[in-house]
Length: 452
Image 1 (tube, rainbow, N blue to C red):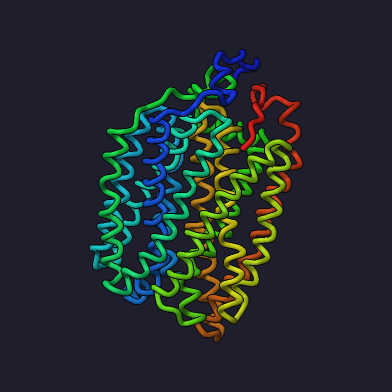
Image 2 (image 1 turned 90 degrees about the horizontal axis):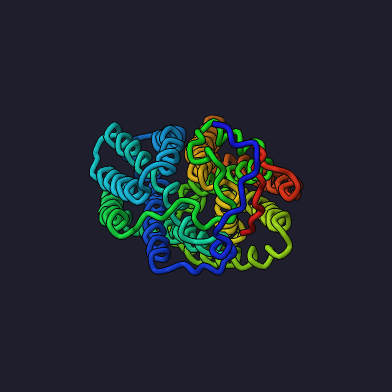
């Protein structure tokens, strides 16, 4: 359904939208539960690359073969991601979040109990179904509990779940695998997340959609479908380029990290727990520090406008891309680890600002669908495209006579420059962002140029 041809009337909630509205206990409870669920969601996703080597050995797979196991998760996330966003815009988000959190936790536990490749793939399909329905309702619940002026801080706290989840999925899972095997590691993580679904369903209260936004939701926006949402994103060039840049960062950065545990094991002979210890510190210490620093920096830069914020992200990503190239082409462990410290934390710096920019630029009525479309692109990139392409290149180089470690290192070195393309997309978004002040967004709805 198309948007109206006239700008919406002025909203009647200026006090809340202007930032004088203070989030209450329910807002912080919603944020806390959503963040813990997101933490376990990320941890369950990171377990697989951490346990990649023992899983590959047990099922006798090639690099392309073991990467294809992630195809099941990625395809389900892509298939059900947008329907989950549609549901999150129409049904109770707390129940959707609770059901999906229970599902992905159960599938992780069942994955640890499997003994055949077919059964393991089936649990990956179920994991993807559960994960697809968690992030859209979480982000929109938070957006409807925190006004735009405080939304960046809330989104930053939420994205700290990536840091904690990545740490648990690397350091903790690696240690458990070395001690008890990969089956036990997955079982422990799956069982840990089962109570979270009940907490979401019974403790979170459903807020009014768009109640804290400056501009009233245009007539028909609540009923706008997926095609109308795509059209809105396409016509709002700033929003479109930010989403392209964010998806490219995920493909580049998290795609490389998917293979990094195997890279450390094959190139430098580290064990699962040793590799997990290296990456765990990067995720927990580096990631959390970078996330907080990004929130402070973006708040300060908000005085200079959206364009400066976006350009700052582009500059940092470009530097990180160069560091990633060195990290995966070096042959000395200290050099690789140093460059990982220069590159991995940056993956956290863009997350909160990007989520906040997307939620602020998208009207409340299509916010969950916009988030779902963004997550579809990121899922395809970091769960399907990057693992499969790097695995294929690794097998190709190995077939040419390279040792396994060198083949993987060369494959990752070829893939690493993609980060420069991500920086370019953000730079382009900064160039066109000034037009949001003067031009109406698609359907002639005036843009509300919020800052992070």
